[in-house]
Length: 145
Image 1 (tube, one colour):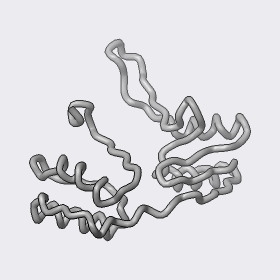
Image 2 (image 1 turned 60 degrees about the vertical axis):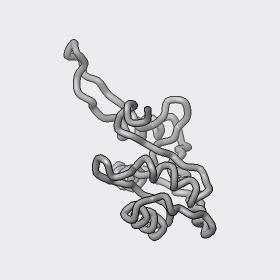
Image 3 (image 1 turned 120 degrees about the horizontal axis):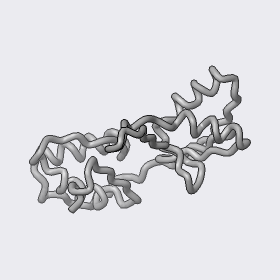
């Protein structure tokens, strides 16, 4: 099976049996519904065979133990460079430190701040400082409204 690794996603190409194996490994229980029936969720998209990039190492390790051969193609791009001319003087000092930490991390990572820490301001500042495509994930839909 061939795994093509991009910055956020991993594409899977292989036989039907290999794709079924990947689907099985990336399926997990989410508990039960209100009628007591088990519910499952799968990290492999049903529309095309891709899954989140953070799962590639455990999947490759499971594949090796199962005797499957994995070829990993690395198609990741370098994160964009911060714009040195962009002024973010409207941020608080602790938010500037958060931006500096994100720059040191190469423009990638997870921002974990307390309630009232100014995550909304960072969401506005990051695309200005890093002029590239961004993916923002939140825990609940109410957090984006």
